[in-house]
Amino acid sequence: MAISVRERTAELAVMKAIGFGDRSILFFVLGESLTIALVGGLLGLALAYLSVPVLDKLLNGRLPNLILSQTILVGGLLVAVIVGVTSGLLPGIGAMRMRVVNALRRV
Image 1: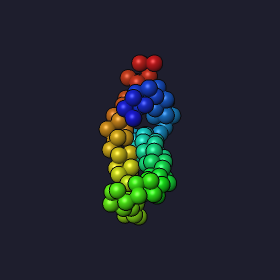
Image 2 (image 1 turned 60 degrees about the vertical axis):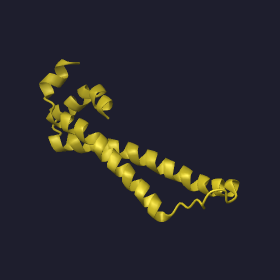
Image 3 (image 1 turned 45 degrees about the vertical axis):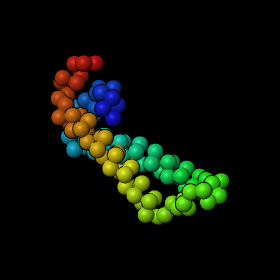
Image 4 (image 1 turned 90 degrees about the horizontal axis):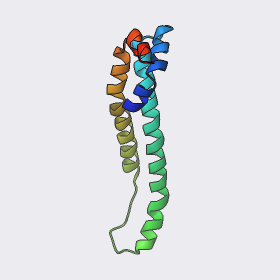
């Protein structure tokens, strides 16, 4: 997310120049980060949900039963949300504190 915000400094500066507030910029960056993390987390959980029964059949009792409970799925989703928020928080705060004049000067 830090690289994404750095690459779009000009766009964020223009958004601030036309009237978007600091909170709007922060929520924009956090929303993007959370969306990316949730899509990745949901894809990973779906892949695990589909592959665990197949792996359990292939192992034929060589290991303890593989179980993917709802608690584990909810925990995985919670981890995806935490990763999304934490990865977008610092870049979002940096974008929020960015001065429009300095950001447009870099372009």
